[in-house]
Amino acid sequence: MNSGKGAAMPKIEIDKMMLARVEGRKLLFARTRGLDTFYSLGGKREPGETDEQALVREVLEEANVRIDPATIKHVQTFEGPAPDGRWMRMTCYDAEFEGVMTPSSEIEEFKYLSSTDKQLTTQMGAMLLDWFKEQDLID
Image 1 (cartoon, rainbow, N blue to C red):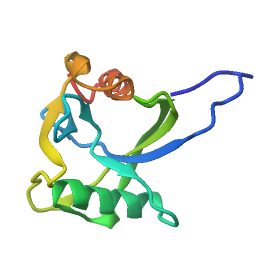
Image 2: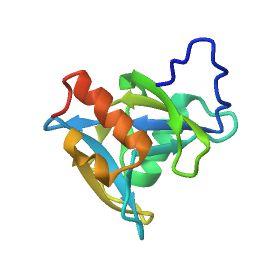
Image 3: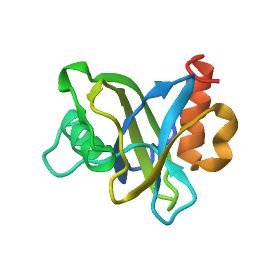
């Protein structure tokens, strides 16, 4: 999270929603086909979408499960650098869904990461793992 007092806040260039799913004291991530790095499950909103609509659509596209919109709960919002150096906002939600997650054509695998797996993800992913560990939600 960015908390610079008096400092100019960087312009948000990427606005993403994430399904912040914790199982077995680990946080869910996904790896895109052809890449080694694990990213959050979710993605960017399309024009006119709410956070909830973007989250439901992205999770359906990536994991082939339908989120129950009535169960969506805001967890935390983070800001920090994206892998390409642009400034990103990552809004994390937990939600219940129907079915079993199966990778879409763009996703190679899902993996639950602990705070000791930061080397497998991005700088933002490491920030998420640190926060979830500080909240005693993951190991």
